[in-house]
Each structure stands twice: as C-alpha cells, then as structure tokens.
Image 1 (cartoon, rainbow, N blue to C red):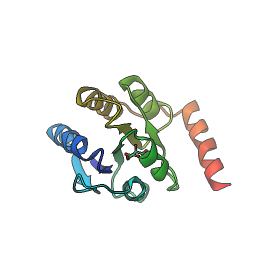
Image 2: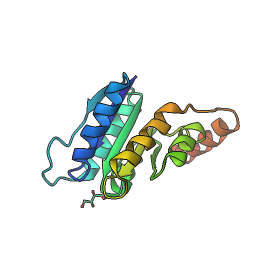
Image 3: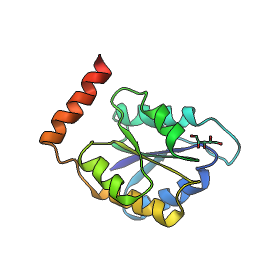
Image 4: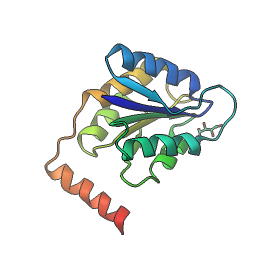
Amino acid sequence: MKVALGSDHVGFEMKKVVRAHLEAKGYECVDYGSNSPDRCDYPVYGERVGRAVAGGECELGVLICGTGIGISLAANRVPGIRAAVCSEPYSAQMTRQHNNANIIAFGARVVGEGTALSIVDAFFGAEFEGGRHAERVALLEAIERN
Ligand code: RB5
C-alpha cells in the first residue's frame, strides 16, 4: 500500500520516525514535505497530502503538525478527504472502522513517539466495516456535495 506523509516543521522529525516504522512494515511511503525543520505553513502540506489521497496517488495518509489540528483542517478541505486527529490508538482504530477516515493526523507537541506509532499501527491495522457506517459516510459526502 502507498501512504502519503506530510508535516510542517513541528512534525518534521516525527514524520521521519513514522516513515521508518511504516517502511519496516512493508508500506511504500511518499513524503510530500516539509523537508526541513525550517518554519513553514501547515496548510500547504495538509493540502498536498489531501490531494494525493483524494486523487488516488496514495491510498491513505499521515499528517503531523504541532497539534494535528491545523494540518487536518487543511486536508479536510479537499473533497473526498476524511482526516481524523487522534491522540490515542482507540480513536485511530475506530475512525478507520466507522468513519472510513483516509488520513490520520496527530500532534508532535501532543503525543510522544511511542504513542504516535501506536496510533499509526491502530489506524493501519483496522479496516472500514461498511454496512451502517457506509450509510453515515455517505451522509458526510452529501454534506460535501451540497
Ligand atoms: C506551528 O507553530 C503550529 O501552529 C502548527 O504546528 C500546528 O499545531 C497548527 O495547528
């Protein structure tokens, strides 16, 4: 599976750790920046990853900024994106199973590396359950269309 990674300067170091972790598990990662710890703007990277996932270049995405919030807000402005900010693994698993989230986001100033990797494992280890949840995701998509 191809995974899109993105961060701002705050998430830059954690993105490297996440990439190594995912690659060790056999995922192919595409890094959409940022590419240095120099100050930059999270909307740029949230949008890039959002477009990569919505456009089908990558199946799922991981976004990291200080809180995970700003960068997920940017991604969620791309039609077709369901980016969820999670600070613990249970929510990461559930957002994949129930919301069919296609991007997981978290904050490098909120969670440590161990928790970040548990969040990633929970998200990538889960699958969308469909059924009644698909109907609800369809309602979300209707909001987007209207
Ligand atoms: C950068 O200082 C910070 O605002 C950013 O990383 C993020 O937390 C925004 O939501």
